[in-house]
Length: 322
Image (cartoon, rainbow, N blue to C red):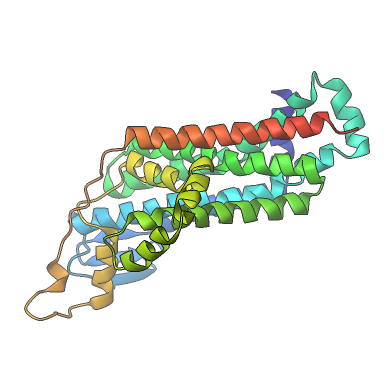
């Protein structure tokens, strides 16, 4: 715990920490600047006004706007860009700890090398939790201020974000022990994160055989056992996509109409197709119940992968001459 606190304090003194914090505040302010009134909506705290006959205060589209924007802020920033910024700071912690001068001071005072590595890992995860909490609390207060709703379930975003970042942090820590290079640990971790996303997307596509891509997917699926092997590989890797979907359903930030339908209304304006008024096509987007077994499996596999990588890092550290 002492090493974790020292790691958190060390990371919080860096400029990237304050950049992460201020960008989190900027995301909250950008969402809070949106407002719906009787004659339309505005952005930038009234700086930009947009007259509208449907996106007004009290209309179903108001909830669609705020829930849709908040959902994207949570997915794109809290569990997306903010963890990537945190990696830039965390990547250098372990390699610096293994330098001759610091290692001579740090390891003799620690109960074990595993305590040092796990303390660095825990401090790095806590480092990401700070901007995640700031942004989530800000978005919660924004929804209460603008819409007079207080969705407490939005705070479920924080454990999802921490778990998703823990995977990347464990890989970065292990690579720091293996390579003793901050740049190598960071680059390989980013490549790993991108590869996991691509593999999961490729493994999930064949399941939708009834789509327009079904013919091509079927050709690949029946040509060999490649898809089965791909799905097996994706199964043992962190389930980041399933965690993201689970977070979206667990927070329950859904209006009665889909956000993409709102975007489509802006795009087509008052255009009518045939005898159907496209603007009046409304789709119910009620939140689906969380799939307990599937989400639980994703959490279990992701946590297990993180633990396995940390064990590998401890094993490598114990074999090093310091």
